[in-house]
Length: 404
Image (cartoon, rainbow, N blue to C red; front, side, top):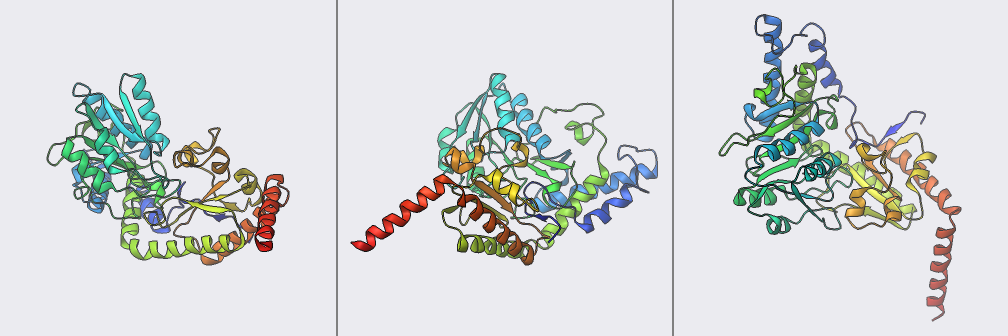
């Protein structure tokens, strides 16, 4: 194969053709500003944005007025965390999160510490999962926010969001979840799961980059936020700026497609993930899967290849797009903070690769990619003194065992 095989769908996804077709009219003839109330071109843009808002709301069990459009999940995370911190500071200054969160959450929390907030960072288990009972133990009277991701972007582990949400609701603590990797892949019901705030991004589900959303609870006790961006009062004052109508329409269409075929699509993607795992482990020893064996996104396979530097492996198979960490932290020196959080050593973390399989991958691609990766791993190990020494030691132990 001369083309690149794309196995990095957790970083971003190609725009689905149906999504592209839905967006085009709002880039051309229906180009209006959704805030232009004086003419039909503006009304048409506003109608499109409101229809899209309703689609996203219905997809997660929310009301349209509970959806705030943003430029992506990073902005949504910032608005949720900083917005709550600033609004409820008089009530308390304590926030609870976890060590395996995306940097778009952890970095925001770090900046709040500089502003006088106290942040408790919970450890995760060896699969990357948060223990709901540990959450319960760490909540205090001054806790104003708990923020835990729905599904991990590096190892694919899915948290018990319903349990965490129930604990936070019982304690009167606002619960935010970064649901970027979960939308369109696993069912989300903000009511049943007691979610108060949830962040989403279009480009993880075959929608356009530059568009996301934040769910902000209005039912019961409404969540109030201090906005990050002020100006014209758009999005009910929570996020000023001209709405990205083409992106919003594209996001809604992406959500529609994902929900329409979620069950069937995730079964197919899981079968490709399992095929890749079977092919790799059939030929390669000294490997391990990182992430929960059951509670894991269908398309995510994070594997450690001992005695293989991940960067060296990727450089040998340049026609296969994969990653050694989150795309958002790939420029940061050191091993993945997620892999270190689940207990991997620095060396093991730097020997790990994330494969994330998506809608447009095929069985032929998986088989081709597996063959290339197997060949590359074997060649790297063949010149690795550490691997050769370990192999010799292993062979010697077998011989001794046979002699006995």
